[in-house]
Length: 240
Image (tube, rainbow, N blue to C red; front, top):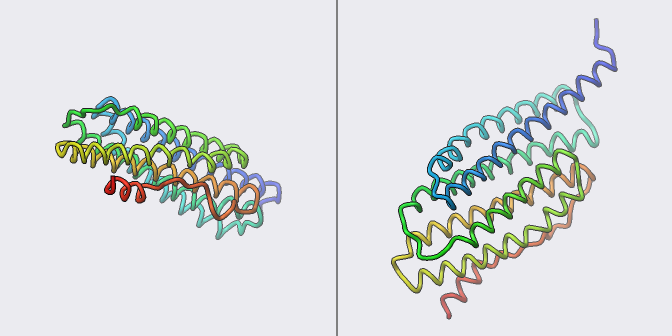
């Protein structure tokens, strides 16, 4: 006996919910990775660093599962309008989530090396940046869960604050390196860590743009708030 239209609709809705659930599960793992990466840096917690790195395989596996699930839905359901936007957008979103997981793992790996050094300066600025990035990730996953376009716009706009801290950290670390050559190696690791965190913010912003498009059916402006002037800061640092 063929499935009734009502059964098909319920089955389709269940698949959409499953897709959303897999994306949120993936986001939850990445949030945990970022939390562990923060503990690895600020608390010199090697166990947390190891956990952040090992979770990356779970994220990669979920991305592949979601991709296969989406391909199957597109082939069998032939979605239209809002459903099509949601399903196609999920591929972009999971790609950004996976990259955030990669950056969190990279931060954790560098924290293990950084723990070998005694730093002559506090990590308050980096800690603040970590807090902002974690808040951004949590906010955009909440927006994804609730189809909240307004919250997505808030995340999109807030990227400037992360860029501002990154630029300040960049200049500060360059100054330390110029003043004391012994600080070059640890400061280089910190520069890479800060850049990875800045990229996490960028990918959270990408997700915000995609969530907005999936909900509203239109794109945010092409030019998003952006405050990364680190290249300019290097030129200034060399001149000063």
